[in-house]
Structure formats: C-alpha cells, structure tokens
Amino acid sequence: MIFPPQFLSLVFAVVVILYFLASAIKILKEYERGVVFRLGRVIPVKGPGLVIIWPVIDKLVRVSLRTITMDVPSQDIITKDNVTVKVNAVVYFRVMDPIKAVTAIEDFYFGTSQIAQTTLRSVLGQSQLDELLSKRDEINAELQRIIDFQTEPWGVKVTAVEVKNVDLPVEMQRAIARQAEAERERRAKVIHAEGELQAAQKLADAAKIIATQPATLQLRFLQTLTEIASEKNSTVIFPVPIDLLRPFIEKRGL
Image (tube, rainbow, N blue to C red):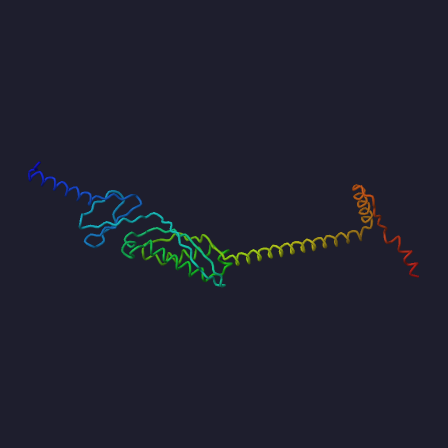
C-alpha cells in the first residue's frame, strides 16, 4: 500500500507537533517548583500547576519543597574522655530557595548528608560520655545550628537534628552498670542514715518529755505489757525500775 506524499507530510507534521506539545507542557504538583534554564540562564521559578516552556530552548528541573527525612549512618566517635562509641542520627530539612538548591551545589541532598556526618563526629568528639547520654537536647540543638549554618547558602533549611542511638562497648556498659549499682547503694545508705538521725532526734525529744513527766514512763510500761500479752508469749519480761533497786545497790556499795 503506497501513501501519497501529502499524507506522509501530514503525519510527520502531527508527530512533530505532539512531540513539541509533550515537551512544552509540564504539570507541577503543589509541593513542587520548577527551575527553568532558558539558553543556560535561570528565569523566575515556575509552578505549581500547569507550566509551559519552550522545547529545546528551555530546560526544567523539578525541586520538591517537602521536608526530607535523612538518616545519618552510624559514625565511630571518640569522646572527649577517650570512649569509643557508635552514634547515628536523623536530620530533617527542606528546600527554601529552589534556585540556590540547583545552582549553588550539584546535589544538595548528598551535600547535606556529608555535612551532617562530619558535624556529628566533630561535635560529639568534643563532648564527654556523660554529656552525650544526659544532655541530648543541648547536643541536638548545637548540631542543628551548625548544619543549618553550612547549608543556608544552598537554600536549604535544617529544621531539626536528633541523635538516635548511642552504642557503647560491652566493657563500658558493664562499668556504667557497676557505677549505677554503687550509686543506688550510696543513696540507700544515705537514706538509712537520715532515718537513723531522725529517729534519734525523736527519741531525744521523747526522753525530754518523759523526764519532765515521770508518769509517762509508767504509762509506757503498761502499754508494753499490753503488747506482750496480746502475743500469747510463754515468757514475759518484767522490767523493774532502777529506782527500786537503788537502796540495795547503795547499801551493798557501803
């Protein structure tokens, strides 16, 4: 079957038009922006929605404005007190200036990842192990400030940095466990000593009251007998006041 030349020309023209239309019409989502290079030079950002560009002349680069969650691989870190630990973290950031994110750096995601790794090693290497375990919020804030300062020229805003896991060597875990046990024992002894001190103070106060009111000693004596009788013991200890024995002791001493 032979087609006439006019028909072939029409088909070719339709194909060329469809190609140019497909290349010229772009649809950007709500969270996307288009950085357009026209003959190599940047023009104002396009999007979201329907965007029409010139085929061949224009080149469009899509940039997402959503917050990116990036996992920082585990890093071997030597703390200020010479303890080797493995630490990983997570970084949250987003593109604030699409033009800078495309023109100022080749790959802003890879660049932010490298900055996060080096900053993590640098900051945690200046901290002691106790600070790394107890002052997590302060360390996170310092990491966020430093990384954000480095990525600001790229149009990238770091919103948060969180240290996730701190893996300690086995021998260090044992040492910390012994330290925690010793601390608990110290607190128990301090609490016991404070209880003994308070009991001694109360006994001293009671002795002063009994000294001024001798009848209270007799009441205490009767209360003790009542408590012993309720236990149904076969042996009853009967305390004898020392005042009853004093004349005999003095006579024997003479």
